[in-house]
Image (cartoon, rainbow, N blue to C red; front, side, top):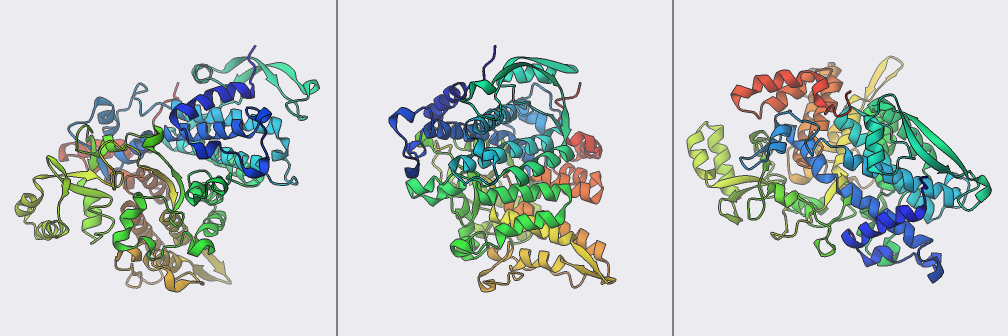
Length: 577
């Protein structure tokens, strides 16, 4: 008989927490809870340990998301050091055995969320009561619902369709058995708790679980989790910073602003622009804490690179935090750095570098998102003046002299190395940050239009304002700089485009926003999915195919272009029979 108990969940997660994620602040209970010694492993300590374990599982997905979200797109390629699995991803020849194709880490996170959601519902049924007073269990419940929705969403973008993981499946072996089953899967005897809660034995009964495998596509995932997040979440995010007085803790867990970012994304992909706008505007028109999440001078010009040195609540909405002192590390430096013992297996493409250099984007480009690193001397970067000289020579088609300037330098992804020593391996990873939401909203404003008594009212200028200078803000407009403005780029101007041709303007602006997303969000695991979304909106798979094919050697471009012109090939078909 399989008994899903809270202690079973806790044993796994508390071991994970103590070994991998130990942090004294996380284990200090909120002062208002008045935890007694007798409650130590029966109340808030248990829940916070499980919460910590969920974030550990989410961190395990970072390398996979970056590789699948960037290496398959146009701004990242492999080096000669890449192993067979990375080469297979780069060449769109991904087998089920490839570690980057494996859904296991998604399943682990989803299953753990399912279990924890169930426990919270059983032991604290007030989380299901919208009229009940809000407490920290409601906040935790909101975190876990967001975590699960995020996991399903990212999985379906990668795989095209994903199986529904029933809450009775509590081990990876059971999940794999269910996934590999044909038709139905019989789970073992399972203890089901009634609505009266965990402690009322009269409401407990046994039943055998017969599961029919259900595959969910993006539309179904969006329907399910929009409904769940809109109707079941009362509040999101335990206020850990009330104990440790470190406000960055607010943004290293799921929180109110991350909730709005996630729901805004869901509505944007669903095509419900009005609802997406409502959630995104909750974030960027938030005037609390000194114009939080508005693009002012805090990270402007040379300060832009500081976004990746420290977590700041004016920029970071939700960020996965690592700390080598507590054995919380990742593989990002290993993937990108040339200095030993790192492997330098991935690097920026020429197309990526041109995206910054051809636009004169000197603040987000060299020395920030990427860098020219001297071969054999990781601490020596190519000077800005030399980079600009090489660019000018290429513009004049003097490729030989340009290559002489950069020949002794490797191009590297740099944003995860800023401020890092060789063995740190603990660069944080941004799930959501402020300019991405501005760019999302600009994308939506591009296509928002109303017919008022025969007159079409459009919002394209709002989109331009968000990009250029933030002048669409009503309050505090004098502090706004816009996505491009805060790094000194000249504003986009639609005035010279054909008058009255709205579709042409929208297409043009959509592509400029996509370019801006590349400069701002490069190497953050989003690029391939951005290309997918825009190509689908254009109803033109060749849009994605052409951009990605351009990074390959000439003799391979036609093959890649033809392959990616079939939208079906954008997904990893792990679950095909």
